[in-house]
Amino acid sequence: MAEIIQRDGTWAFDGDTVRITPGLHRSVPLFRQTYGEIAVPLEAVSGVVLEPERRRGRLRLRLREGADPLLQATGGRLPDAADPYRLAVDADRTGVAEYVAEEIRRALLLDRIPKEPAKAYLLPGPPVPVSVRSSDGTVSFDGTRVRIDWADTSERVKRATGPRIITMGDLVQVEWLPNSGHEDGLLRFVTRETVFSKLPPEKDPYALDLWGSARRDLLTALVATAVTARLPHPSSRAGSESDSYAQDSRSAHALPLAADHHDVLLRRLRELGRLHRDGVLTDEEFARTKAVVLRGF
Image (tube, rainbow, N blue to C red; front, side, top):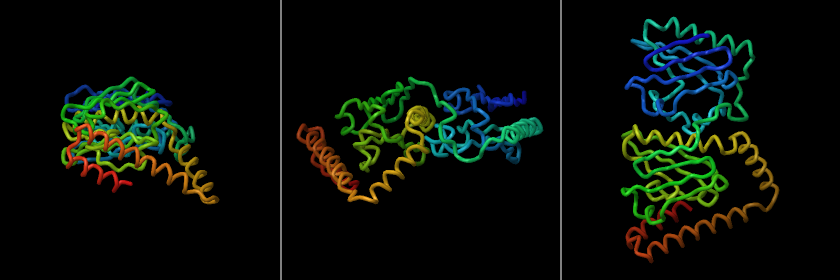
């Protein structure tokens, strides 16, 4: 067993699995503490490096593309401190860190782990049910459906629609951007009906606008990851999209897509019109939101 214990957390490698446990010190970000222990199978690893810094080093585990739903959902946008695959190493422990890294490298060579993208998720993501309260509302996922309950501070057009429930069968993908403290983030659930919609997150009833506590809003990545883990793997989507494109190229193809596009636009405009008639949207809010919808289409 190769193991290194630091204030930032613990890495232990038994030849088959890299077990990453976050530290309990208050300096460890809330996201890492909430995500908890991660068991990374060797087949999901593409490499490991020890990056020297001025006063301390940093172990970094590299995973194969497509192996981890967390990396897929966040797209490498997690702040460095919140990245569970990085471990801050004290200067007097760099020798131990290099030993752990070398043991992982040796196992990768002996087991001949491929470096090409994985064709299925090799890590499970966070367990469900999972629920997170953000600046724009509370988002919950039970493994089969997503529910969004809007906050009192959410835009009126969102609160007027009531809780939003989205089933896995309707979902196409999840978009996530962190709230950096300087720029707002978002958690958007793209459905078959809204795939063409380009509403800004503060107006989109399928998106959470993340503008409050960056520390708290970062937890929405838990929901994004849990949902991503249960969507078709990117490799299968890429294949089906390529097949679909090839088939469309051989036929008079664009009409069904254009018809779907038009139907979605009409449904969104009818929904806005109803909110306007019911007095939920003022004339100015209706005109502004309608213009955004039309630009998006």
